Amino acid sequence: SESLTVAELAKKLGREPSEIIKKLFMLGVMATINQELDKDAIELICAEYEVEVEEEILVDKTDLEVYFEPEDETLQEERPPVVTIMGHVDHGKTTLLDSIRNTKVTAGEAGGITQHIGAYQVVENGKKITFLDTPGHAAFTTMRARGAKVTDLAIIVVAADDGVMPQTVEAINHAKAAEVPIIIAVNKMDKPSANPDRVMQELTEHGLVPEAWGGETIFVPISALKGEGIDALLEMILLVSEVGELKANPARRAIGTVIEAELDKGRGSVATLLVQDGTLHVGDPIVVGNTFGRVRAMVNDLGRRVKDAGPSTPVEITGLNDVPQAGDRFVVFEDEKTARQVGETRATSALQVQRSEKTRVTLDNLFDQL
Ligand code: GDP
Ligand code: MG
Image (spheres, rainbow, N blue to C red):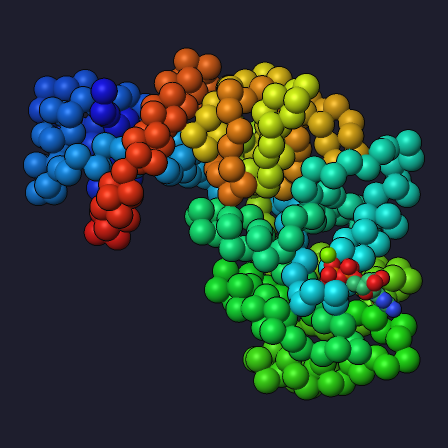
């Protein structure tokens, strides 16, 4: 019952799948990249690399990346940035998210009923920007703990009448740890007590020196409440994104991350996915975390049914067998049979891992080792 595919084994051993296939061939076993290997074959290969097989090597199925081969960079095109908003409580994160959405989304999309799916897209100067609408800290902590990198840029909101607070510092640390560029939105500039100089001074102490003072950090004064400075902020996001040269290939099978998911009474498992590379289509066979299915219907952030979702697009899907978790990765497969096979194996493995805390610890050790 316990097995690994060639791709998974290669990943574990830190080798190319083609190398494993060659070794297997030398040992008289013909195999393809997605082929499940039995315990004997795994042991043979591990012996070749002088790696001792532990039972646990067979149950770690957490990494879906193995089914997404890297490819020629020349096939990639520019993609929209994915932005997370963080900051201290009451400094204006929700107000800013609403303000951006209200001024930008409804303008060009008359008739669209905005729908909360955990992320949305706006257009500034003809270019799209994706905002994660989930609490910024969660996006960094939960998702990063699960190995997902979803954010290209962090907006840290600091209220000009309150200054740098503990969660401001926390946000800075999250962004720095993720090596994500930071833009500071100095909010509540409409208040008579606003003191932007103090905000700049305090942030300088955390290594964020404003451009005006010879540093590299972009500060944008805004009033999220009054909708002032929003365009300047969006323009800065696009400017910083251009430097990052964010790219993806819309022509390939999709890969990405679960933003949020829940069980809906009528529709069953509903998940918001952020497509990070490739294009997701209705009908695609898909593995999401430890569940799988076929994309039955897709709805965008305006509540409209769509058939395709390209890079950096958030989309809500139905059609999964079970409810995945925020931060889970997803990958589209060419055929339903493989998706089912991989999905079922992962579901079984996840159960096995769940059953034994001891196994989980051993897995972590193993992961460190390889
Ligand atoms: P969050 O906890 O960071 O999401 O903060 P909220 O967006 O909920 O805002 C907290 C409070 O600050 C609310 O009462 C907002 O109306 C207010 N607020 C947010 N932005 C501004 C602003 O630009 N100016 C003023 N005067 N108040 C604001
Ligand atoms: Mg809020």
